[in-house]
Image 1 (cartoon, one colour):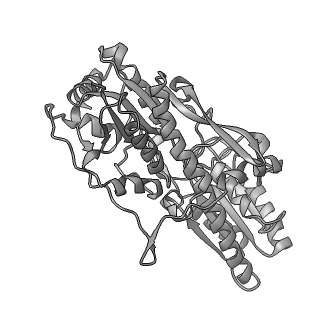
Image 2 (cartoon, rainbow, N blue to C red):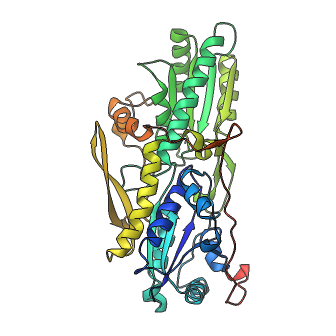
Length: 421
């Protein structure tokens, strides 16, 4: 009998990660000769270690199909990295215990660069522990910092949301600037990469409207230069919209602001750049301003998803399964751009070694010479990624998002203590 498949989600979720989940589940069920049953781990790799395996056969078929338009992580996610096999061997022995107990032969891990490292470590269990397992990464991240792919599923929808709210908020500021607010500041996600901040520039209907300054994670922040450009923009247009990457850095390379520190930098909670920036602007210019931090909202806003993004998220999930059926292993599906106008793309694959713990920043040629905007090349690159609408169904005036029941399979292994991890 063919072995079972296990799917899990990892890291910060997106508006379309569940579309990838449905792509995996539907494709696994379409190949009964290659796979047994498809299960899901609750809360990512932690769910495997804790033997919390969701029985998808207990879910309503409508609910599973509705994953395509449901935001969040339907099966729960986590921020947890597997340790070094030499130092943390018990983790890997536990994974083998659980895989054997539930007859798992294929593991699909849906996440970003750090999650691809976890998938790679699982893929090497065969060599380390003698248990044959095929592990495949399924890409996602709103930061768009995964390497080797034209875009990361999740980014297009977040970019569309940011560009939309910036366009709408700028009209509000424009209405009030003669006697009130002169500056509106928006903080967006982006630990090392300014892709989401760059997407805000898509709000501009023509050059300089709305007037905008973007502070990229890739460009060291110079307060004096920024204030000069801000004042010049206000004198010319009467107001200015400022968009800030949460990963904004000072000249010495340190973070401009940190919401909550962590021993592992990748898990340090960024944020707080906007209130600090707002305080500085008030002190130095006296301008009235408003600010906002979109935070979780930008990655949860499924009601305004990009149709292209939804289609790509589903496609990489399906391609992950089809790649296994074709005999590939230890890979991540990637999106290859064939043309920009009209946008044409295909699915390819790369080895997990190419993308594990690798971050891709904004190309410098995508940032304008003054460091506060994007080039036409960047605009042309981003526009296709936010194209099209894929609205969820609405009920009583609100989007309808069915919830997974999450019935767990009976445990077959000894309890795994937290201190063992």
